[in-house]
Image (cartoon, rainbow, N blue to C red; front, top):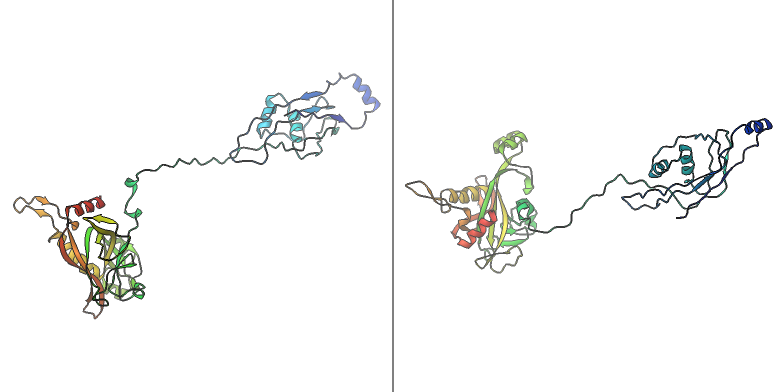
Length: 375
């Protein structure tokens, strides 16, 4: 960029004769000084800016006395000031240069020792020469996208699986389905109610892959979800109880044992549902979660699954003489024929519960798949 030049002249009143005589004894003032400021250093801005720093203009100062006093001190607040200082300019000269960066055609006045005003002879350029400070905000570094096998970082909470439900005598599901229907993901009937649809009622084969340790669920009317705790101590701390009589007497919230099983459900004949995506022994299976509490917990968990695993056909095989483990039992070593049952109680109430009937042993391939699911 070509340098710009500015000329100044004193326009104050002429000195008196006595002042003129005194001036003769003073050495003449040096001729006009031309100060050329180097271009301002490049400023790296984090964000795009509207005004771009331009090199400082060339300034020609005329008529300034031997001593120049600046009204306001000039602080080095930007790279241009530092560059001007490095070039040897005085603070007064820097003040004049900085004052030329204001709005175009604005008057510039610097007080001298004689208080004589300075008039701008040549107008400044109209383009902006503002210095843009570097942003204090650092850019966020984004790593490049990388795709691979994240299986080691996946746990059960990262996977959404369908759930199994029995349609009760109350609740929203009863408005759409028959009480006693066994549903997958609250959408597909996998076992029709034996009471409402006895001709369509057929058991479904279910393999229990594993059972989660019991938790404690708050009982709510209509099957609504309440608090869920991992221990009885948490229940007591929350002001709840597991005793029905105490809950009735004191009004404390009643909690029930809840067991959750991971199951493989064999696809019923003629049923079309995308959840049945596991192919084992040329059969399709759906992997799902099934929660049991209240009457269902008593009838299935305590009445069928745990007795079979601990003492029955799914137990560990132990040598009777040495008492050493011969073969490890597992829930997935066998399958169950599952239906629903309307169970009556001494109180006169009744409730639909799942009904598990022993089926048979599972194949080595299915056991291998179940083991891989459990990890």
